[in-house]
Image 1: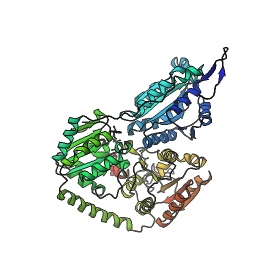
Image 2: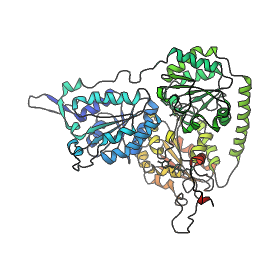
Image 3: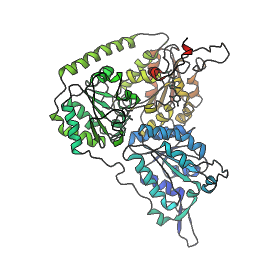
Image 4: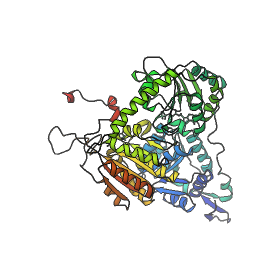
Length: 573
Ligand code: ADP
Ligand code: TPW
């Protein structure tokens, strides 16, 4: 509130909605805005920059929203996305919904048109009832109508985003609100820093005892770490629990690196085996959704399982199968309580550990053989082998990953060594997070970021290469170019001029796109060339795109999700 805007007749210093919005953000250390300007927020974005906040402007709101979402995931503070009304808001809404589904805290702030005209549907510029449109797709939605409520409105939005299960919040700022004025001295009192926005939630003692009892009775225990565990920033407690219990663990894709993937207790290389064979499973910040086959069926084997579930959201329990021991609270507190009793839990038997290690050795040897093959043209495995090696040498790099085959193989092949370094398509399996997450991760961490992208996946956010170059971000985008969605070999069965639905322009020069904005483009066709380009690009710390030409016959339809892909019986004739 340094700038007094104007004075009224009595010479009282006045401030306005624009200033108070910025003050509310600053008071809560929300110092970065990802957004896209236009009526009515252009001046708000200008003012934010003038007041020392960082404003990162995008070419499409969905990617600004994705950047905010990943910033929220990395920091436990709500990421901030700012958009204009109706279409800008709707463009951002996909990211808000995706953040909510993934339990990432963010606030989508959109300007909105005149309430009186919108509500009577009299046809205003960018007319839309944004508040109600947002409600079904986010954790909470609020509108601030009066300038005196800006401080309290932001407090509500912040708390809703980060307390309990994190998620997306929509905050509607009518154009009129921004222009409202009030005495600056009075206004000062309305802005405040939210106290303890992420309160600890301590689990009940009997729930802890019940969980320990299940572990004590287990013959083949398993710990499953989800992205909630990574988000919780309880890295030391989780590592202690794994190591002190001696229980093998499996990380979900975004929990990779919470413990280094080469940790001796990682059962990743024996995933199918442990899911089928374990008799007790401790879920830490992971939901039994489709990514875990809903906790039942073939994946989970014949033996009945006993699940212990640590989660902050009580009604997540029993969502798909019965949970024997729910442990409700924040992960740091729950794991801390389990640690106190872990000495009373017997170590897993040598039989269980040996069986897992045997399976791991066998699968790793098989994978090593596949990776060692020099395929020409280059395939997914050849390319990912060198990416794995480069990441191992640069463990601080943020890795963003999307596509179908590109996602499945990269998750399996590229090891992570540090927490909250892997960001991917997540709970929805969404395409389009590539450049948004990369920009968010690079801006928040200041560290080199590598996006491993299917060529289709890249297309959803490709124009943000200009944003990457404009802010000179240390982002290297690798496009796995196999000429289409999944692969590039489909044919139009009619013989007509249109290509098949999954096919793109052959040998597209994605590397030239980044050159248009002043970045460095590489065109590579062998693993050796890819390794050299990636090493150079990471070291340079400048915007780069590597067009990695991949055998167009190498992918499978839908990657590993073929079972979810209905296909017509007629087409199979
Ligand atoms: P994954 O996709 O990696 O399996 P999910 O997104 O399905 O992970 O699950 C994350 C879970 O973590 C959600 O159910 C969410 O409520 C929970 N969660 C997030 N943060 C915390 C926290 N701090 N403490 C406890 N649970 C949390
Ligand atoms: C918003 C459907 C899932 S995976 C994919 C699409 C279009 C792209 C796969 O091809 P790509 O990868 O990226 O070239 P690869 O490695 O197999 O060659 N729209 C949205 N989300 C999803 N998931 C889709 C469409 C889809």
